[in-house]
Length: 79
Image (cartoon, rainbow, N blue to C red; front, side, top):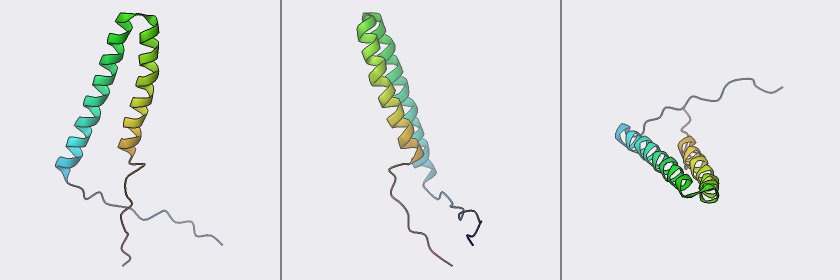
């Protein structure tokens, strides 16, 4: 019979300044992407649509980086 227990809780013991710097990087890159996309819409419909398509991919990549999908796995120590 399978055990029905939750996975062990992990404590994020990273440097708080590093987390703040990463969040500011995410916000800055997202704001720049949206700003450039809006500016491309002032050039016309076709450049705006192409910029929106590219911006979607950039914003999803920034979001995925924030989730830590590609983050290296830390070794768990058993007690």
